[in-house]
Image: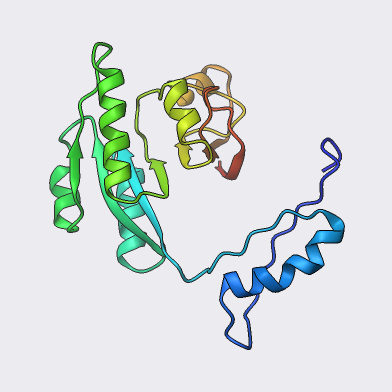
Length: 199
């Protein structure tokens, strides 16, 4: 990265000796030290504990549940949080705990504290906002930095915030898109993970 002067690399490999990540890390320390490298080893077969959050549009939730059900998403869905009851039956039919946490201007602080309790009790490692139509507070974004992903229904950085399709239509855009990005205190401006477009 020219801006930071850092080199980033991700490598996938299989240990023929069957060593664990911690054993490989201990051996790799001697290689990394002379270069002041920062490194992490993760077992690709360990399943991340994920908490999904949804409001009233269920297409992202349904897609994630379907991919999880058929084994295409190697995660453990530890629960679904919603500020509405619309998808309670869908979630319960998948044998996943459903948590109804209503959000208003008056109770936002308490609602987010409740969400954090659910995350802690379930051992959540990642929160996925699957069309969760509430803006998270700066405090929650900071507490969960790097642990919340949003699925935004536009090709960011264009058309941030609410009604991106309406914004795009108003500008005469001929492509639609979606963006998965990490959530930060700056609305829809977190680091982009993946994007796609369709005509």
